[in-house]
Length: 467
Image 1: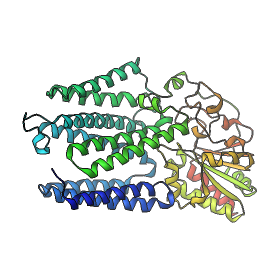
Image 2: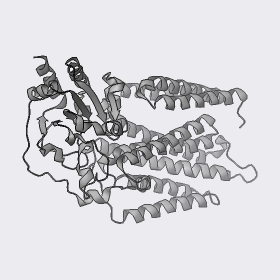
Image 3: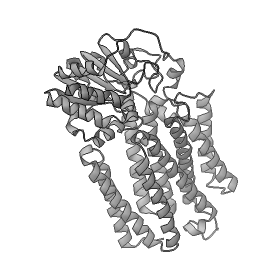
Image 4: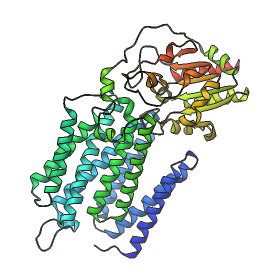
């Protein structure tokens, strides 16, 4: 179906707005503007599509109202700590939508305008689009469901190892690609539904061997998959905006995955294969050892930080769980009032998804110029009086630099142990990080453990500073 000139122009405008949205989201200072560009672009794209296909508008309006209502309620109620699993859940819905669109196109190809008039069969090029769309969509769905279960605590964050998993994965992927190619010559139902079933299975198999410490990379990788699934379905639906949007999401997600892999010293190919870092995790070394450590109080921490020239704050998932970001900013404000220089050190994979800590600090109105990435601030710990670690474990663990049996070995970490004093806020000494590895920093001579809920501990420190 030929697209009218005005619609092509509208889709072009929406595509430009999507690109501007990605550009805006690359920096915290312009992220709100980027979100606005993205929302306006999507509004234009949806409105244009509805005008072009004017049938069934009542049903579509009802569906939009239901979906929009659910999205509004979820967005209002979701805690910032649950944002990673929400993102994973959204990715699964994108994948499922791609599967349903492909299934609808296969069952009623005439409605989608993809029938060869001469033969009455589905166009060969449409079969390629359909096969790839349903394969990527099914992988995205089942993989995102497993990621959600791991992030939400319904499934163990440890790698779940299957015997001969690489052989099984490669064999399943080869079968999927072979059947998609065979689909060009035979559009029998068994081919289509076998591709669908195997794709659901491989999504599951790819994600279960991946450990919790690597989940941020998984989230960005699934984001990329969801984009490519949407792009493939855009070809089936002959929708330019969907193709452009899917390609933007897919490519930006792939780039982010590559950046995350570099930050964790992982191979991008091993991410795609699934189970990266799993061999190391299975060889272990993460058991708790009874070793001497020093315990401090809120008063001790307040005194040490007020006497410091510079304090570097290292936030982690524990801060997110306790929702301590606002109290943390209040503590930093008091320190700055005392003449102490305050900086925040952000590890690329701190939390459960890319940018998790940046979002939380932005929510607490922490000035952007005080927030630094690992490569920009790591050299400063050696000249810093106090490193205040709040709920960050794996990203500060020196075992990543020394212990080859550790599942986090090779991952760049924040060198907090080089500070004159390390104040480590942790709920208790009984647990280990998400990767299941104990942290040697807990037991160092220059470390003082502050055992309590992160928010309560910071609030107590703020009170102690006021006296």
